[in-house]
Length: 233
Length: 255
Image 1 (tube, one colour):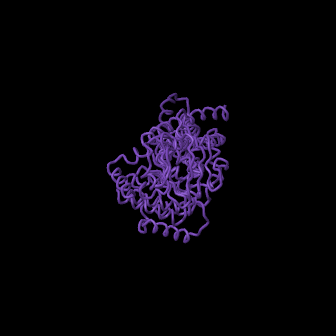
Image 2 (cartoon, rainbow over the protein chains, first blue to last red; image 1 turned 90 degrees about the vertical axis):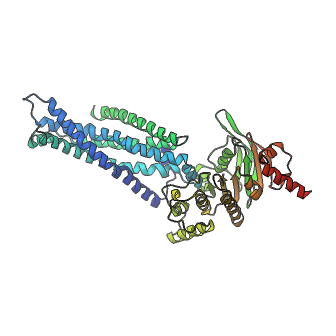
């Protein structure tokens, strides 16, 4: 399937408008939920870290350090990707699946259009913007942590910020973005596969969406383990 | 002209098409009829290249489809127009967007040339005032006409229709039949229609192929179908009292 996606490309003028439409739908349309989840997850991570650091000899800056590490390494890239597998993945499967059951994909094929290229490539390219959404999630997650720490009385602002800057390794951000790019490809292709090759009617579209969410999540979690072992292990 | 030679198609253990050979002539409306499950849709999808037969050849004006490379097959498909049973219009596009789609994909026409062509074909199917409407906002008959407009906008050499009358009232069904026949003659297209509608058989069937259990049981014209003694054909076509009477009257008139 993946090879077919890149063969016989659609006219650039049409592809450009499809890519912009998908960026709007898949990325900008998801920013609200990404920001909402990142903010509160950042806050919760901070509170839980603070509550577990009750030894008076441990500096409060560790709360900021732990929040930064958790958000950048795991919560922003992986947790957000699981959310996106549900939101974006089910949208992709159901939209392509509906086109399959209503013979719109057959109509494209009969016209001589490479339907895989027309339907899937714009989604893959649009998902290249996904690391920007994850960068926002990182920023908002840490902001949520700072607000929870300062306004919840768990750590003073200066200590928290000191912890954020403590032993910062830029490679951890690179690692997070590499992971994110790979997850973006998974989020675009696995649901597309389930939608494109589905059989049946409206009920099966719903089933395909559920199956695609399960498989996308499974692939993300397994890849997360492999990539972490390869890049940080 | 489409020539079909000994086409076989199976799905797993079920052998759907069992060696069909026939030809579809240019400028004529060719009908495929038969009971549900007789293999009509599979046969039509083989003609369209959506299914690859395991055996046999389908030759379009001398080009053997199975011998073409994938890109050549796609180029050949640009010469085909298809009207699907459920119209298969793109939900996210307006009527104009649907009809303009093949032009945008495959031609280098300017916007004004495309608009002129879209206006022309929509006028041809009597839908001059539906440009900005979405498929969900128009009736089933109008959707079929938009599907016909989309199918002919590229001046196809071959037009395929899968049950173009299904779900339509009798008056609209006749309008669609007549429209397809007029377009076939006007543009000298090879038209193949998959139908259950006996009115279509009587009215526009210049060549009829009757499929039964994956075999070609009979072929002839809409005049010959009145005279045939083939039991399977008569049982299928003249199953209603009305058509039995029509046949009787036709034969009495001939005698």
